Image 1: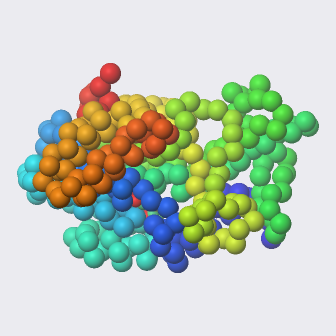
Image 2 (image 1 turned 90 degrees about the vertical axis):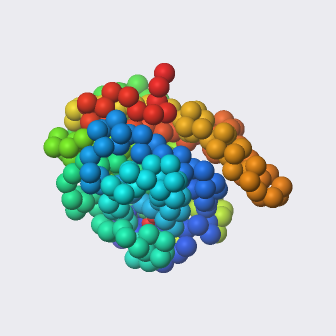
Image 3 (image 1 turned 30 degrees about the vertical axis):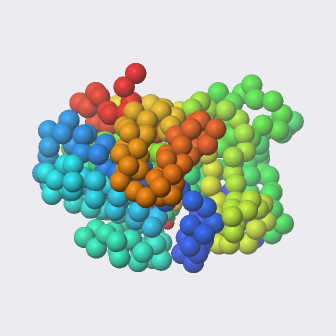
Length: 330
Ligand code: SAH
């Protein structure tokens, strides 16, 4: 069988998330520190005030994993912004039945969706951490005779001549053997967010890993049992496949669809502006020494540039009336 890379990646990840506990293979910011979800919850509450406190408001999370981020966000907002907490209706976008069951145990009031399209209309706040990196990508490789597109056969990579319409004019000066990536599914998510903003105010916060500017490179990676494996020859469903998120392309799509784009800024800067170190410090003071040290260490892991602070970026897309977004001030 020969499949285009995006079809292969979609199939592999659907099988992976349906059958495995992804968090045995990798960890994510909400699993590293409770402060991550708490800060994002408070971020949402501040945006809600800037939107004029619409009630009810849809609090949407795409790809909620174990539900940790949302649980931390709800606890923090119940404390610090109970009016926002009371106004929020929880909607989770999750395709994996296995992860839905884990989420349901922690977030019983949520309503689940397979995609953003079925979330009801209304003013909204959307959070997505490490969601876009799991969406299927296409890859193009520049060969001597022209651009090829990557397919996957029984023994790994197969290349076929690319359709000229898929090749971006900005790639024309790329050297031979350069790889370019497109993630149409991420573009569709941005379009769907923009569509919702035509009738209601809303903001989406997208946090993921990837470069600030578009550049050639093969970023597809696969992790199985905590180790990097070959993404194209590993049995589909046994490894988590991810790719860098193309923030600049998504920003262009969002602007063309009429949204305001905030950032991207490095995660470390974004979280520090929201008070990562102050909140971690305050929390640490109420804990026994070993737990206090762990909380401060976790904060450094999320924030420091040589850890997750620089590779990860935060970008917000908002209704054009929302000129300011917390964490994105210059
Ligand atoms: N946000 C969580 C989990 C990240 S893992 C965290 O930070 O810990 C990616 C999540 O997205 C998982 O919940 C996975 O099941 C979900 N997911 C992956 N592809 C999806 C798709 N196409 N549609 C909906 N959910 C998807």
